[in-house]
Image (cartoon, rainbow, N blue to C red; front, side):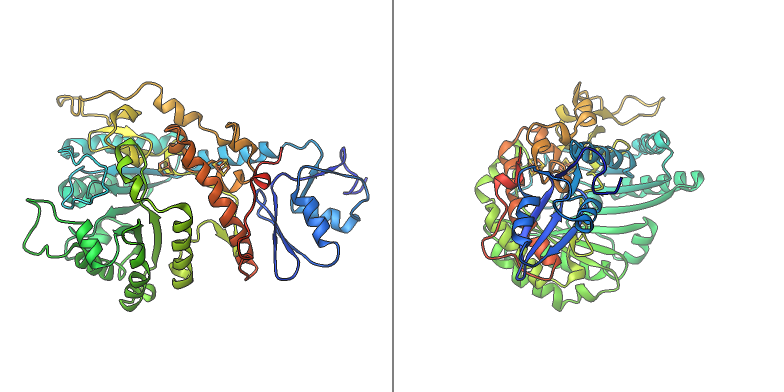
Length: 479
Ligand code: SF4
Ligand code: SF4
């Protein structure tokens, strides 16, 4: 039996998309990541067949060479083959293989009062008595599957406002990892205003391999939005923008910096000038990589619902991302989902879905997602405390059933996502939006892929998608 006639017959795949190119069509397979460029007189009919509703291909209809090629690349499958099961298996493998990452909220305190900040800025802070508990969490997570690498993400509030804890915890975690022969590295999410002068020593001492610094526009916008809070302003605090700029200049001599540009209606017009400023300061040619990402300020939960009127529409945000793509050098662009020029099926999950990762709140509670910190009803556990000390953080208890929701989350079983042909590249988007039952945000995810996937596929061929071309809901949901 040859390749063409094996099994019970062949059918088109549910994950095939086609994009018109200057000459012919691109075929893209969202589950295998395969791409084909089809030209010639049959290209229109053939690519329409392959990317349309599920169709059975009669034996011999396409010729042996083409059939074999389409099977190899996933565009044709055995009739009755469960393609969803492949995506499901890849998803659960990714969850099991995810690295051990502890996101540690050293404090909820912050010296800046950004208008959009939804965090409580309570007095909660981890302290020296929590160090042992943190090491215990690290030990437990590493032991579960015998993983050999630990990453700590220092988070806040402004994490460097609790430098005493960070210094002690970092030393203890590194000592523990060294004794176990486990690799250790760290990253920091910071507003860029509270760093020590000895950056080289600090980065090296804490094994920091990446820092995220956020900007809210050019100086006037940034300083107005990121004001020093009363009582927190020191003599050196004249401009939070200047401080963050100088910090990025310095950090790029020692480690990677991810610059996050928080965009809304009020500062979208600053993006071009900001990228030009970054270029003049040499960020894109520095010894370490600088990646600039445009993020949309959005309401992630009820606590931040006041942001809704400021949010960019999906179309406005896409225009801004397009501008950044045009202006930024390639190595300054976040390209983690693009492999050899084309969008790649997902193979990793966010930290909230990683069973061996944890988010430690400054309240001593354990969460799954960093955006939940300070919402005790979303907690899934509690930081272990020393046996001989009074019970720390005896506040609200973790919510029953919350951890089980995260453990069970599987986009391949959801009524909408399981029917969606973007599933292999999307995996349902942000799971927290499903937990918060936010259908508008989930619908926006579909819109994102309908507009952006064709652009990404065309870009892989060095072209721009045809003006106004987007996939339809019929392309997205085929059965
Ligand atoms: S649940 Fe959403 S917000 Fe939280 S870590 Fe995952 S992707 Fe990010
Ligand atoms: S695009 Fe929407 S429906 Fe499709 S997988 Fe993503 S979140 Fe689910």
